[in-house]
Image (cartoon, rainbow, N blue to C red; front, side):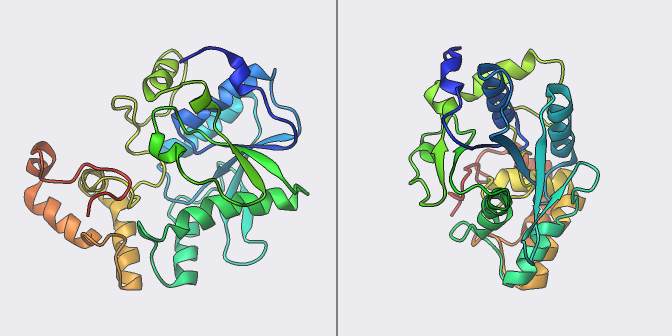
Length: 274
């Protein structure tokens, strides 16, 4: 990793800084702020809440904003025009309401092959807000690191924005991000396991490993219940491999053995558990 802040100099025009609520994108935000002596009006920070983020994530987004003096625009999907709403830490959904509204409107569940949840709840929700501000074209700063080649090699979208990956250009890896937060007076209060926050983003995302989803069922049954209820309501599954009820039943029978035994649960992220 280099400490050269030139990698974080804002490009010309309007810039969206995508803050997922995790350590990596917060680290990127801090570097951009330091490189540009704060943020000009043409740069906005957005956080799109799906309602399935851990409460620690919401607290962290609020603390980043207050400690660093940055205005984070909190956004949520809505199923009717203008299809987004600006919220805040107090009013943000905490029980999956935006996600439920999207599922009920579509009447089917997202999965590895059809990730419309990310598109609607995050990407399009931010886009609709920025267009409402009068933006026609902009640069989207995303927190993809240099050690994430699969994400870096994806085809950029043909839309109103140009993707900017300053962390990758600066050679930042997950352990660099961990070292940064280890030295800060505050942090995201979710476990950091070898530079990874396995409980970050949507708590039971189908792109997380089977093992991580099993941990949710075992350690956070109340949060797992939302995913199981969504499958029961729609009559389908988030994964081809198992239903959330089957996963819960398995964990109730096997318990800690399944989490301690290599090979009992697939540990690949990104939907590779097939």
